[in-house]
Image (cartoon, one colour):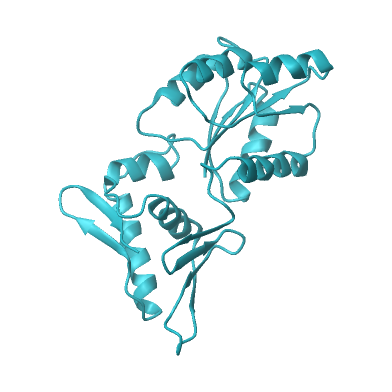
Length: 230
């Protein structure tokens, strides 16, 4: 799951990003509303949640929420703010925020609210994701493959990046996704791009399947990209 974090307090933004990355989220962190809007309009990157501070430079968090909703975006938004009065909460929710977290807060509450958004939002992937006979366990970054009745199901442990690649492709079964789209979705936008990083990771996933005696469901479509065929 890719998250856009919009927070201008350097220490807090860094701390939130570190916690989210530790929970296997992919995080783009920006410090003002104008940059955030540029990221949200980027056609190559699809965010599943935005965490937006209300009082940020350039374009306020409140205005970002209003823009999103005026563009018919259903992106779940968790708003962060030091403004904790009931009328402020009402204003934030009416602007389009889905939840509201008052500073100072503890990180476990932030994570709990993200999980709650995940449960409430049908477009977000659940903690266990199943496509055909393949299921991903988010808690253990493990892939389970259902076998015929006379065989035990196969369990394949995954690295974080293997898990992220499979999760993204499984969210789009039987759809061909360009390697460039996968690159923008699953790697940090601040990293120096490597032209073959997606192909290299797909090779590692296929080797993992082969090591466990299973056929890999990721197919290469020449000149177009990759497709998960359950």
